[in-house]
Length: 175
Ligand SMILES: Cc1cc2nc3c(=O)[nH]c(=O)nc-3n(C[C@H](O)[C@H](O)[C@H](O)COP(=O)(O)O)c2cc1C
Image 1 (tube, rainbow, N blue to C red):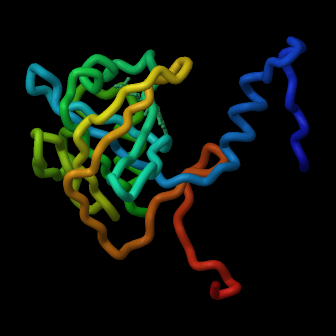
Image 2 (spheres, protein in one colour):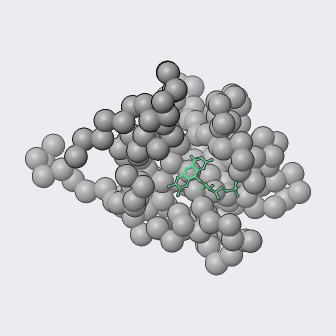
């Protein structure tokens, strides 16, 4: 069924939050855990699907963080952040890093990259970035990072689509 609900708020020029969320949810994304180390040395990480590429030369990526996130101050102050692109078999990791558990890293295998950023085992890709710019973005803060190191593995990635987890598969057309 086609959801044609561009303006549910009744306010001229304003879009209803549910309609916006529903339409944005039709943009399939990968799932990442973005990490840093706070000024006090505490490990910080959250599930984020706002990650995207910006530029190859220079190598830049971005993601956005809700201004209501508990981790806001840690990422604002951090010189580095890590991007862990989750594999199809890491749904529990995605759920853990988006839940209000006390220590999200407990029982999660990881090692430290440059700047002390936690890099999780078993991911399809990892990036260590130096925070390059921070931009205001409405109720989010946009972080642009310059990639210092990256690595990739050949396994199916975790996907987020329509508020549900899915996984990558080849298209039946073979293209
Ligand atoms: C699939 C998925 C993607 C998410 N993407 C983002 C995101 O890009 N930015 C964000 O701020 N929160 C995002 N969230 C929500 C955070 O993971 C969640 O609010 C988390 O508890 C924030 O952690 P914190 O409050 O400890 O910083 C996402 C959640 C899920 C399940």
